[in-house]
Length: 501
Image (tube, rainbow, N blue to C red; front, side):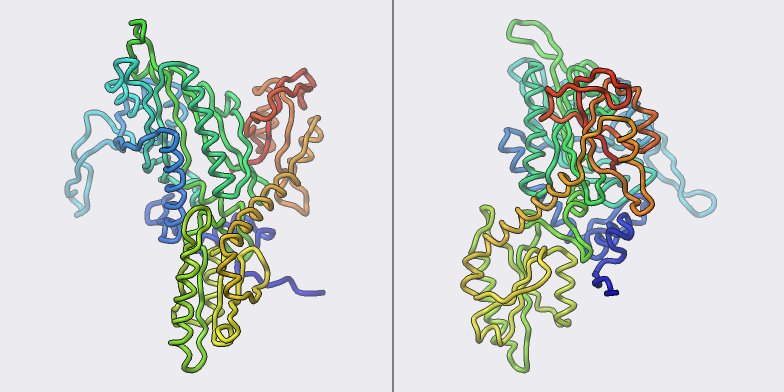
């Protein structure tokens, strides 16, 4: 019996997927736990990845007419109390500030001293504080629309945390817009979920399903929530971004009113939308393998790393050659920008360098030694291919952009195939139970199940039992009628069901 191939990450995905995820983060040096429970330190390689996401998204936001602003971290508790459904949805996750200074205590420590007149909430999301600001900004229809985005941190006091996917504090962007009409606000909601779909599929190489949340799954206080849903390699779903049509709910609570063209005083229509550092977790679980992180080239901090290999007194010659190769490659373009190239000239063993970059997900690794220089070749390894191969230097330089584009597409295609291979249509409760029940030889059950349903409330006992949720009612599936898989009643809607993060 042959031995299983040795992997850089232990355990493997098949052996223990949750622990594999944590080990990939550690091996890639993306983040680590902090002294504050539930919070993380994002390390330079992980933060460069987030910065690349930020830059791409920020450009997309600005291309759709939005501007950036910044609003306070602290929200008066009375602001949240004005919107009952909203505060109910976030109440258990709120961190509350009650005092504003410290003083020595008799035991030599410190204790809170100055009690605040009104408690302040560390923002879990900013609809209320931004709405109060907009109420001052909006007086006339000429003040509309307001199209603003904020890059910020938020706090949601999670009890069970997992790096990038669910932490007490995380980084995100939140767009908040105000419109004169319902139609304009709905158009904005749909436009921004499409921006998220574009980013997920064309930058992250992560296929997603766009759809509407059911009433029980909507953002607290929203009239409609649109989301993008992705399948991770363990076949669980991950909500990767949301866009909310808030109707006039927050406008009424925050008194965002304007004088219309006809002179009437009307409540405005608002939206909000956001993605977070959860996208880093999504990227890890969509593409990475048992050797570590795998990065789509469009987001990779480095596209190409060159490892010089020295023999005897060849250092000067090899380094000069490698530097000229770096300059040639950096003069090429991929996805409309220069190829990002670095040289790893650290004084450590070649094998250690190789695995360092594999585990960090660098798309292309190059090795160059005296023999390669003499032959005019380069030893090239591509992250999703098992073996490195020799290639002529001139060919490499001429095709580097093409190689990166091919890797980007191959990662998307592999993720799409995984989703398609693990998506089914179920018509009965028995089929549903069988699909989502764990088998003895497979601790992970299910995938994506498309099912008609008539009544969301009636599904709850079954969904809770199987730990399954309704992910969304896909936009691409609006006109499909059938029978409810649970009750057999006529059903006009079909949703995607899955176990989820």
